[in-house]
Image 1 (cartoon, chains in turn red, cyan):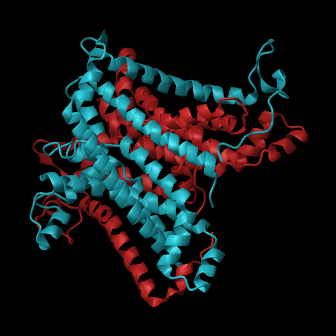
Image 2 (image 1 turned 60 degrees about the horizontal axis):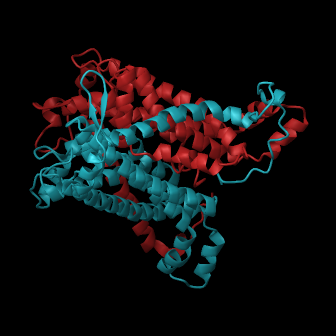
Image 3 (image 1 turned 90 degrees about the vertical axis):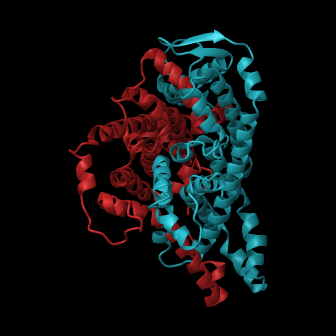
Length: 283
Length: 312
């Protein structure tokens, strides 16, 4: 909001400190990512050179090997897209409806309901995987995409309900009331008045659900088999007893990371709200 | 804010309008109907697993030909509570939490304060600083292995040039520090982002007044800025605490608990117990203990929201 700050006045010396801190933070943040990006274009000799290769002949061999080569990445990519995409969309639809209900309802026990929803979202993955593994085994959902989608909804759905309800709570109910005075039904007021005002919330919630599911490793490593393995599994499978193909691994890493960075930065303005589950707003 | 009490009563709701079946008796309002599908799915995905987890913790679980449960009474619980390795893991988890959260808060606050006083290009800088948050933890772990590889790691060669010659992920202390730093790399940006939002909410005129008074920079920071963003700092801390108990991918793909158990935190132990030794009942008892910890943190979080309301 306000760009003014108290520290600007404090002279060139402290400005220097500020820039030094920012520079170090940038280096610490970016070096691993840049190194991974560089690694994905290195041949096998350069990628494991004893003296780190800063200058090298770039090659597309790693990417070529992943698309059409021996380690075909396409099925993994497809599984990731379906599992993350469908779980995000389903969570967003159910979460939007439930979140609106939760934000506007005056029912008794609402606090308990909210608390249950947030504890579901925050439950340790290891403690959720365990019973789901037994349940999925019983009903035959192991190594299926629907199983993975359900597993991802176990954390994305409560997240979507909670976050959408936080976004809806910021919209004054008087808007719907005036729409209803003008002849709208409650549902029409929601659909034509509230929902269009919640675009930012919808996009943010959808993107974050997508990121959480796309980046999952723990659920996939337990539930996924040949028919449902996702990109993070493909990355971990390159780690073998005989050695690791770091060039290909860097390429997979880049493929996993890049779309999420783009999606995440697209909603940067609402990231604080999203990642604090609505507890903090605005930059 | 999520706890705003809605004044509008539901009694004005007519069944026809709300789409409820036109029978007599209690009907749900539109809001209730909207909540039903989501809450029903969530119940299936959370209450049933929870009950299953409780049942498992009192059973011997067999996986031969499907799933079989055999009543085991308090066996798993007495083993979990009397296992010294288990308590060592809890201790390690506590140290891991303290180290990651402590460093992330410290660095995150530092970065946020620095970014806050940058006027031009702050948006771009913030975007760059945030990047690690979007990286899948499993990739963070694998990338960490690449950077610290004992023969060709970039960071290994940097450390070698300043005189450190050990195998980073091979030594107990250095491996622990390494997995802590990987977590710090990924999540410090989140703290910076949250704190920056808090700083932007601090009333500039308060800061100007402090400057007029001749209050020093650090004094202003400590006595005026920090107290006014205390709520936000607490939110950041609690969110990170819950996630730190939640995720274990980084350790799982780097050291998997080793060397010599140095990085074997509770979730790693649970995973190993369940999916390597297939001692699922015992693992369930561990899982329930973890669940209690996160529920306590979540309770603090919700209470904070209720009392503080929205900031900025």
